[in-house]
Image 1 (cartoon, one colour):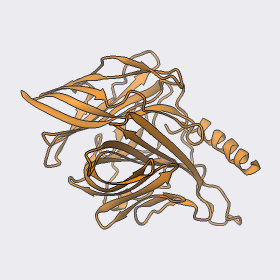
Image 2 (cartoon, rainbow, N blue to C red; image 1 turned 180 degrees about the horizontal axis):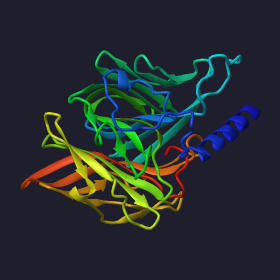
Image 3 (cartoon, rainbow, N blue to C red; image 1 turned 120 degrees about the vertical axis):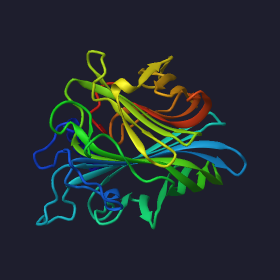
Length: 363
């Protein structure tokens, strides 16, 4: 119990200063030269980093699920090669695992905390492998292998990219606000053919589907006047993929650095400025757990597209009191609308942060 309390106190101290870049860490600045598969691996010279997987799965019996598996790395300080103790702390790791049973109308969430000591948790720099005890994501050949489980939920999935990595932003950075360092190095694998198995409520089900992977690393993203963001990743059945985010300010306006990326079926991408798209909330949902009120359902327009996005399940809120200490909504959505005059459908994920209080934590 004393060790748990000590770790909890340490996590609190780290998270309360998360948004402040330490002089020990490198800022995300223009000119980053992405090289793959190198950049799938960890970047400990930056303070924060996350590897983020979401996807939609169908069992052999036609049951539909969606999942989220995320690994977070936060640098407390640069590693000391002369540290005498194997428990010397330089990095903390957090994991979030969630499953939406779309037909069963249930949402299941687990979280995990690890410290980068004694090999119990870590992220390699020479090849892509990140782990927290028995939760792991790694690159095996060209496929991403995901493995995680807790309680009555476990995932064992193999993901193979169908498109090349998509670099978001301009000149190697995804700028989130005006000023040096309020940015990240951010890319996505927007379509990954997925196969494997899901164990849930005592059953192990072979599944197949489509996933999305985000990887970001930075040392400071949010400006002092920003309260959070609304983020969208959409996979459309016309072969296009769409990432959008809007950064919300304390005065209710959107930061002009909000942006997005449209990816065509061949993997070619186009950067979108805030003026290129609109996101209009259609409704709200109030969480019975946190009391936060989130937008729920959106109309999205951009040249050639008129889309409506709706959650597959209203309650997909994560209250991460044991790890990142952030409450946010992260859930699967369905898409319907028009693409260049034709009917289009799709699926995706939406993340809503800052509606349940100050961010700190993950962001």
